[in-house]
Amino acid sequence: MGSMNLLLLADGRFPAGGHAHSGGMETAVATGGVSDLASLHAFLIGRLATAGLAAAGLAAAACTTKHPWDALDAESDARIPSPALREVSRRQGRLLLRAARALWPGSVLDDLGAACGGTPAGARPSVHLVGPHHPVAMGAAAAAAGLEPLDAARAAVFNAVTGPASAAVRLLGLDPLAVHRLLAEMAPDMDDSAHCAAAGSGGPLDALPCPGSILLDLYAQRHALAEGRLFAS
Amino acid sequence: MPPETPPDRLRPLRVGVGGPVGSGKTALVAALCRMLAERLHIGVVTNDIYTTEDADFLRSQGVLDDNRIRAVQTGCCPHTAIRDDISENLEAVEELETRLAPLDLVLLESGGDNLTATFSQGLVDRQIFVLDVSGGDKVPRKGGPSVTSADLLVINKIDLAPMVGADLEVMRRDSVARRGDRAMIFSSLRKTDGAGEIAEWILSEVAQWAKPSSVRG
Ligand SMILES: Nc1nc2c(ncn2[C@@H]2O[C@H](COP(=O)(O)OP(=O)(O)OP(=O)(O)O)[C@@H](O)[C@H]2O)c(=O)[nH]1
Ligand SMILES: [Mg+2]
Image (tube, rainbow over all chains, first blue to last red; front, side, top):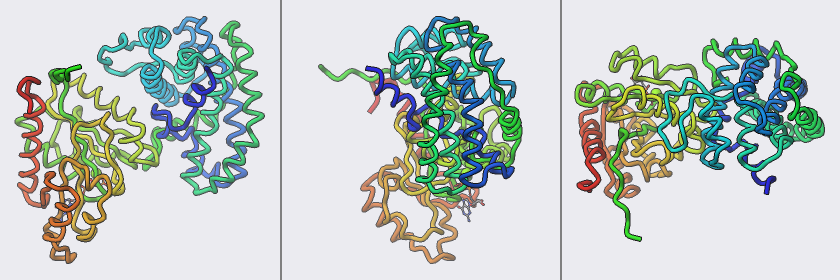
């Protein structure tokens, strides 16, 4: 029953606010870091190996539903040093949780909602200052949808790479066919990252992948203060 | 099964204000706040494409307390945020409604967009589409879902009609042809009382919305 739900969850049209985020691409373009297909490729390889892998590890671990939510939250914080990115992650997590609860209601997502300051199912949402980190919400949504940790890792990796890629199409007017060919070329690496991330999902949380990307952190901080931006991050 | 009586409405009326870039959406929201702030508790959500221009303008006009205005950023596609993926906007609206309860009215301005951009029913209860005469008097004839289905069509900047050679009678006729008897109002928001008729329309919608379900028409 799983695969269709994985496609739904990973789809860029999933109504959880993802379209408003560029994953650092807007600042990368503004500062000249990404300007063509080759530099886009380099950016995406870096993002896959860092933010993508870290998110996939957290999502896979969350999907096991064996780890306490607050421990996953702390591990997420530890992997996201940029305050701006933390806020973005929680905002996206909140919106993903909300959408996922509408699609796959049940105790997994209710528990996560309660643990991160939300309200019981059906009640009016409280003032939204908090929320789960995005990868944790992704893993919990995958579990609620009957998916496996490896699927959660795939969804997280897919999201981490395709989001900025489509932002680059919009920002630079790159040929969408060329960009998608790039994504197809990266598919085996994306799969490898997902497997690698999912392998440790049942083990101790502090052993999850924790690669850092200082440039993405700096981009996020810079973006938060930028004038005239199109994307929220 | 017999139709259920709809529940009494516990939340404010949510009104979307859409329309092409520069047609006067922010000017209309500002005018409505100015005219209605004494009579209604209002919250405003703006969808800026760049920066927080519209929210800043509303704040600078002093028509509403700062904390009653929220800006949402919409990525490259303003219509996505009001139609296909309303999550950011919904969250902003609910946050305002919770924090400022009880509100009577939430106005949600979309980013300037094209003639096909409509609001999702999951986000707003009524929608106003603001055109202006300077785009030419043929725009209502072009139709599109916003022109045909908005609850209120506003044709703004009629003070400019003589200058751009727009024939208001043509616009009225084409609008009626596209929209039947749905409401249509001409306005010039440059005038002090330019939004008077639109404010009346809002007041009657709010009154209808707030009625207990047993007496609602
Ligand atoms: N002459 C004239 N100018 C108007 C009228 N209404 C608005 N304007 C002017 O038109 C310009 C654009 O108005 P806004 O209210 O910012 O338009 P908008 O639809 O919010 O624009 P975006 O949010 O950028 O899509 C401003 O300079 C307004 O002062 C009107 O009735 N007559
Ligand atoms: Mg505006």
